[in-house]
Length: 234
Image (tube, rainbow, N blue to C red; front, side):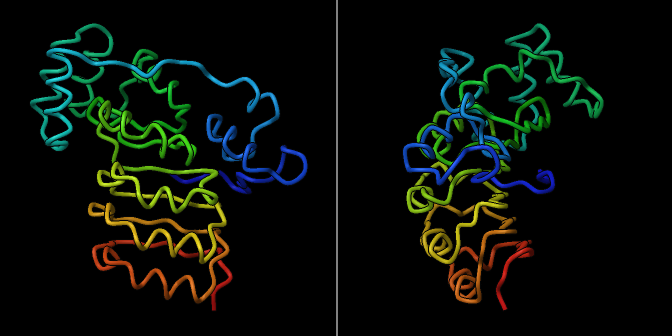
């Protein structure tokens, strides 16, 4: 999920220095650039989607084995309609299948951006850090999310590190959050990054101390890629 150029979740449009209250409100209106005031004052009240009965059973089967096609195919047969047809198209390898509005709409409850669907389900997206911390557990019972881009996360790195729902994330993108060495110190203590394979820490105001901290992470050896460009370390 490459971010656009000149992205900065803390500056640009919000005047002055953002308070903790501002950041919490920004968490419900994520953007690569800071929200306009109207963005943080008029927040979505969309309820979280619910799944019951057979639908819940099939979603659990998908989440238990996210690489298996059969549970996804069974889910498509169950729900039918435009959503079911889309799942079947992607399962058949149709890379040009148009994502129907009904597939993206439920994610408005999390103010998700940059949705990427694979085999019929949203497996990558951008979220505000506060939203993922507070409502991420419900999200990960709804879709097999693998790749996550977080914005406005710097004030909440300690909480993020203690989120059990991080355990499904394979690619974590924190580009442009300026988490600094303190944020890295929190991240390396997380016991939940057991599936993490790709970590993007570009433009996070990291110095050599932060890089040393990162190398102490118990999950560091499992990483296949780490992007540390656009930092000031030496």
